Length: 124
Image 1: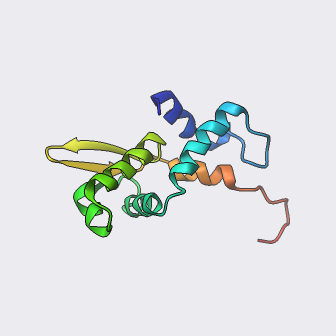
Image 2: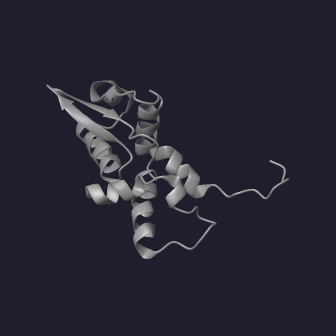
Image 3: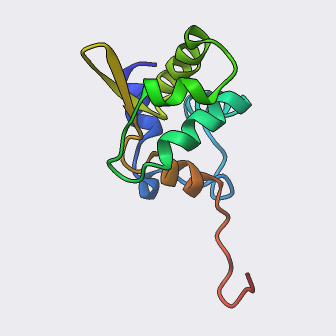
């Protein structure tokens, strides 16, 4: 995924209407599909959860992620690459290890896209 595509997935929720606000154009649908497709695998969903659980600004070393899974290290690296290509995580190599974190607001923007506005006075 290009930096421009990552920026589009990572755009402010105010600029991008939610699912029920307006029909998606072809480009936006393709970009969001990449993110949701990446989340469609249980291993990738768990990896994202492990990274997200570090909180805002937190990061996790790949050396801490790999032992939590049965698949081999190359398979985990492939899953992390797909999450990165979808714009859901970012990383940095430091010596031998790679550290992963969530870009600011990425999960909030995906959640905002799926959230349906409630009419005034509606019950939760």
